[in-house]
Amino acid sequence: MGNNGLAYLTGLDARKDEVLTVSWGRNNQQCQFTLPKLADADDKSQWHQRIPVDCR
Image (cartoon, rainbow, N blue to C red; front, side):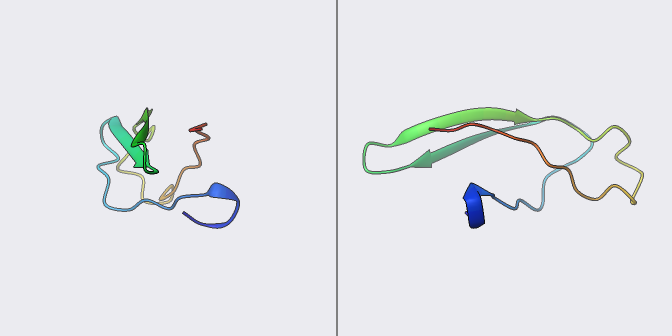
């Protein structure tokens, strides 16, 4: 986790949706969400995407 709760993820396959599960804390709290595929995964000019997710 970075500043203001931002996470930077690498190594994901941008050609398909990716379901991620985040776990934290002693009580094993969890949050699951889907990162959508990029509109055109072959377009190298769009190498990042900001996706807001609320895990509390």
